[in-house]
Amino acid sequence: MDSIQKLHDILQQSRHLCVFTGAGISVPSGIPDFRSAEGIYSQKMHTRYRPEEMISHSFFMRHPDLFYAFYKSKMLYPNAKPNAAHRFFAQLEQEGKTVSVVTQNIDGLHQAAGSSRVYELHGSVHRNYCHRCGRFFSMEELLALPGEVPRCPDDGEIIKPDVVLYEEPLDDRVVRGALHAIGEADTLLIIGTSLVVYPAAAYVRYFQGEHLALINKTPTPMDKEAEIALYDDVVEVIEQLEKIK
Image 1 (cartoon, rainbow, N blue to C red):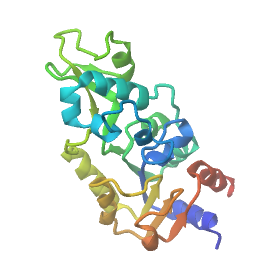
Image 2: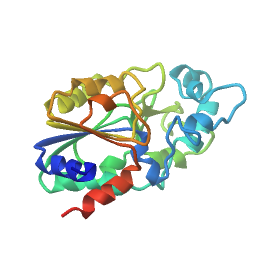
Image 3: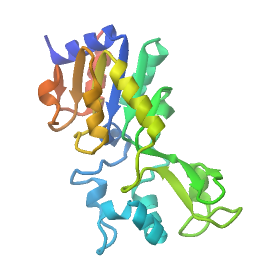
Image 4: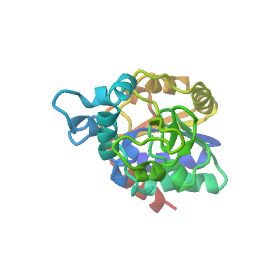
C-alpha cells in the first residue's frame, strides 16, 4: 500500500492520536529550524559567543542585553501564521477525534491553528514574566517596551521569556501531561524533529500504541521502529493526505 494512503487510513482509524512536533513543522511558516545550514544555530551574531551559549540561563543573567539582541532578532516571529500542517491536526480535533500535541516548539502555532490539548515542552515566546512581581506580558507587549532589555513598568525588573533556556529544567507539570498523552495514544506521529534534543527526544519511548509514523526531511533514530517513515516536507505530505477522499 502507498505510504500516504496507509498514513491516511491510520489517522482515520486512530482513536487517540498524539502528534510529537519539532522545528520542522514550523519552517513552512517562515520560522527557521535550529540545526540546518540556514538554522538559528548557524546565524551567528557575535564573534565571541555561540548561539547555544547565548540562549542559556547563565548568559541571560550575565548579559541580558546580548541575550535580547539575539532573542528578538532570531527567535521571535510575530507575523508567523499556522501552516497547513498545524491546521490539519486542529481540524481533526474539531471533527471529534482525540488529538494531543506534544511540541518542542515555542512559537504557539498549534494553539493559533485551534489545537486545544498542547504540551509545550520548551515553553512559549507568547508568555513573558517580570522576574520580581510576576506580571505577565504577551510577545507583542514585550516588543513594545522601550530599551534594549525589556523591563517591567511597575518595578523596573528585567522580564524573562517563559522559554526553557539551556541549563533550565523542563516544567514537571508539562512533562507529566506530555508523557501521559504519549503513553495513552494508539497512534504516535512524529513530525519535523531529528530526535536529538534531550530529554524531550526520549519521551517518544513512552509510546506503547499500535502505529508509529514519522515525517521528517532527514532520518531519525526512531526510523527502524516506525511503521511509516516519510522523508519529505510536512506541508506536501499534508496536502497529499487531504486529497484522499
